[in-house]
Image (tube, rainbow, N blue to C red; front, side, top):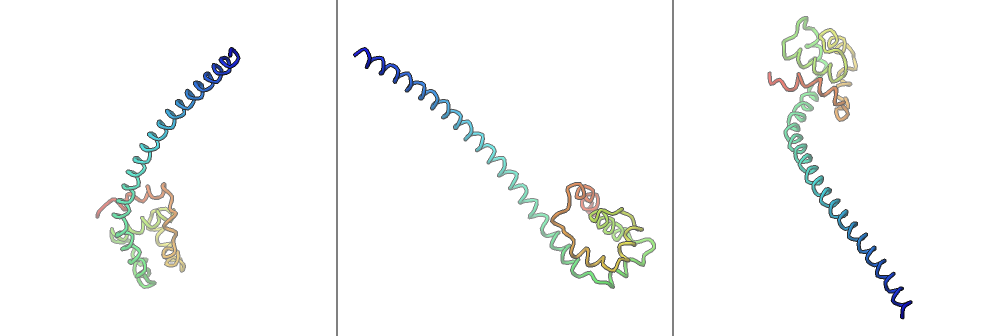
Length: 146
């Protein structure tokens, strides 16, 4: 009987230890679940903001792509003859030079405009892989409504 009581006591100690471990693990799982739920909510807010920003930007992108598709060699020739281009032409070409990671000057723009492949290069430009740094530099042209 004494041996059985001792075995029973040892088993009871093991059960209590395992219950404590299980309780600790349950607390950890609950804490993790709470943290994950919070992070998920924060991530959803960020995703929703990004989706709203994208929805605002898409019409401008589509208009730009449409305008780009309408560009032809005649339009390029018309622009490159300016000694001092109108402000909007200058602003547009500075933005293009910035995105192409070239100096944002009229002299550089004229060099690019004289390149026979310029029209092809801008029409096939990889707009989906512009670095954050370049986008930041281009903001001075894109944020200004004028």
